[in-house]
Image (tube, rainbow, N blue to C red):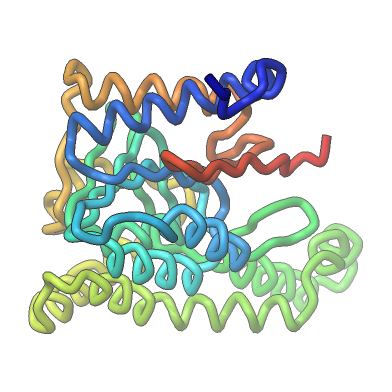
Amino acid sequence: MPHSRTPLFAAEHSARYERQQLIRDYQELTGSNLIVLIDQLFPASLTLVEELLNLLDANKPIHLLLASPGGDGETAVRIVRAIQKRCTELTILLPDMAKSAATILCLGADHMLFGPNGDIGPVDPQLPLPNGLVSAKNIVEAVAEAERRVTNNPQTYPLFAGLLGQVNMLTVEQARSALDRSSNLVREALASNPRRTEKEVKSLAESLKKPLIDDPTSHSAVTSCSDAQRLRLPAANADPTSEEWRIVWALWARYFAMGCFPAGPNAVYEGEIASHIIDRAGS
């Protein structure tokens, strides 16, 4: 009988096949299509997510296992729009954090299922700087504070030269534009769910502006499941003893061991028949 894979090839990729078998087990248990996205959200994510969606049956729900520190809000909206066009409803599984742009993505879901360690956060745009992702709000505030101090006491300029050297005026303007756009991105993400009425989108967008955009002072601020429920978002706690969550956690443990987690060196886009592991550290 012919083999679909040679023994050496199968051995080299055995960990991937084990994960994809767990994905199939979850799908059989829930009747859904399960896809995994663990990465920063930037335009390259769009093609990788499309690869996961390309051959899916749109007459089924999609469950998205998501973990992300954030990224580009425009990308998040485009991703959730693409997913919503390929399913009957969208459930987002949160074993860990989904911050900033990832929170925007979550706003387009029909259901958010929070694991014991899961949380979303402020809609706080992130910009890539040489030392990593930095909050747009923090960029604007830090530069403004540095300029105030240097103006009041020019002798302090050397203390702030390092900060001002990393951030040029274009970056500051990009940060300001990203902040100004946040409310519209929230509204667009909410509206990406075709099962929401225009009235529901408007009401939710208005109620989310203060707690998710205006009030938070830190990108690391936590919005738990109970917080999300108070904000009228479709949030629920996962049952960690259920067979479904046992599979989710078994998958998460494998990704974590590979360095695929929000602040980790690697990223993953994976489904039953597509799998892309990205080495962000370049090792």
